[in-house]
Length: 428
Image 1 (spheres, rainbow, N blue to C red):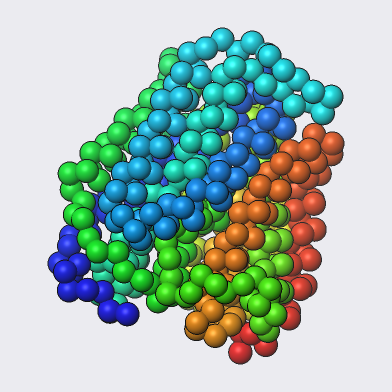
Image 2 (image 1 turned 60 degrees about the horizontal axis):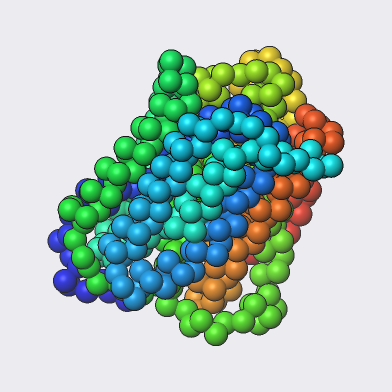
C-alpha cells in the first residue's frame, strides 16, 4: 500500500527527536530503579513485581492505543502517551518526598510502603499509556514512501539507540550528586515535558495508513529490559483466530521459542540489578555505566558486526551461536569481580546482537503474507506474557537460590540453542 501523497514531504526530524526522548527517558530508570526500591524498604520480590506492572499494563493498553491512533490520528495518541509518562514521573517525585515506612509485608517477603505503592501507580500509568515508541514508529511509516522506509527506520533506530546509551550514563552521573535519586527523576520529568511540547508544536497531523508488514526496527530497546508492544494495525483482518494461526506450519514452535527467549532474559533482568545493587553494593553510577556500555556494545554488534557475519552464516547458525554466547555470559554474571562481569557483558552483547535480529528474520519467514501481521502480533503477546511471568517468578527464584538464577537462564539458552536446530527448514 502506497503512502498517500498528502503525507510525503513531512519532515522526520521531529519524530526522531520524540523517539530519542522516549528511549532516553525510559532508559534513565534502568540504573536507579532497583536502588530506589531497596532504599524505600522493598526487596527483590517488590522489584520483580514492579517491573511486571509496566509490562502488564502495557499489554492491556497497547491494543487500545493502536486502535485509537488509527482512528483519531498518531499525533493525538502520542500526546496522550507522553502525558501518561509525564504523570508517571510526577508520581515518582512525590514518592521520593515521602518517608519510607513499611505498611505491609507477607510470608513470602513481599514488602510495601506508601512510596512503593506510588511507584507501582507510576509504572501502571506509564505502562497503560506506554505507546509513545511504537506509535512514533507507526507515524514514521505513515510519512515514509516505501522506497525510503528502510533508510528512515535506520535513522529511527539510531535515535532510539542513542537515547539508550546516554540515558543510563547520565542517570549514573546524576545519581552521584547530593540530590541522589531525585535528580535523575527530575531530569526525566523535564525531558518528558519537553517531548510533549515537541509533539504539540512540531509534529504535523497526518493521515494514518495501513501498514503492509512489521515495522520493527531491531532497536536495542527491544531486547534491553522492556519489550515495547507494538501499537499499530497491520493490513491483516482482525478475525484471524489464534486456533487457526497456531495450526499453520512451524507457528506454534516459533511462539514457544519466542516465549522461552523472553523468559530467560527476564530472569536476568530481575536478578542482575538485585545482585549488583544488593549483594555487590554497586552505586547508581556503576550500574549506569554498566547498562550504558551494554547498550553501546549492542548497537555495534547489531550494526557492523551483524552485517558482516550475516553474509557468511545462516540465520539458524547465528541464532544457535548467539544462544550459546548468551549462556556463557549469563554464567559469568554469578561472579563478583569486574573482569567476569564485563566479560559476561561482552558475551551478552555479542550473543544477543546476532541472535535476536536473526530470530526476528526467521519469524518473518513463517506463514504466508496475509498472516504475517497476525503471527507477529501473537509473538509480541507471547513476549509480553513471558516478561510478566519471568519478572515475577524470577524474583521468587532469586530469593530462593540467589546468583544461581543466572545458571537457570544459562540452561534456558542452551535449551533454546538445541531446539533452534529445527529452524533450518524455515531458514531455507
